[in-house]
Length: 156
Image 1 (cartoon, rainbow, N blue to C red):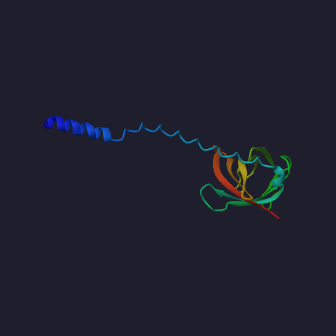
Image 2 (cartoon, rainbow, N blue to C red):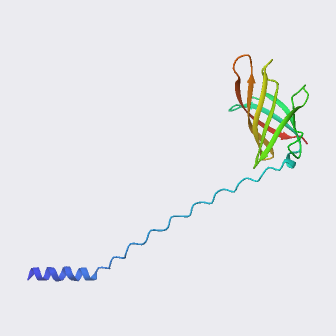
Image 3 (cartoon, rainbow, N blue to C red):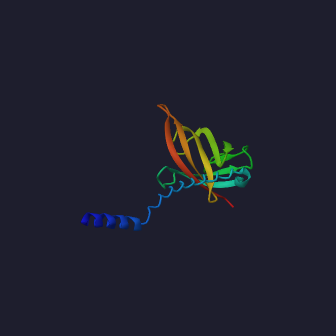
């Protein structure tokens, strides 16, 4: 009889227990964040004028040379002028938010007696013309390469 009472008690407790709810379906994975908007294309007309540019080694704040870029509203007629020198033609092209440039070969400002060609890219950031440049030096030995960064402000 004790067994019977124990079985009835177990059955009664089982009947009083709440039925297990089916497991909730897993939530759908959150949608991926939208890709950031592409930067606005550069408008060369916004850059037309004179820019005072400082060039430093990558990773340092030491200004190696300050010069002027004279920019036009298109890719023709851009020049670079180093202090005490005549203007040098600057070849430019624009793509997206970037301006690519090439100057030279010309007599180096930093290495006496060396000829250099510089190439680089610029972006307009917070009203400043910022970019990275590479100076390719031709010397009696092998060519050498110097990585530089530039920051320019428009001259009023």
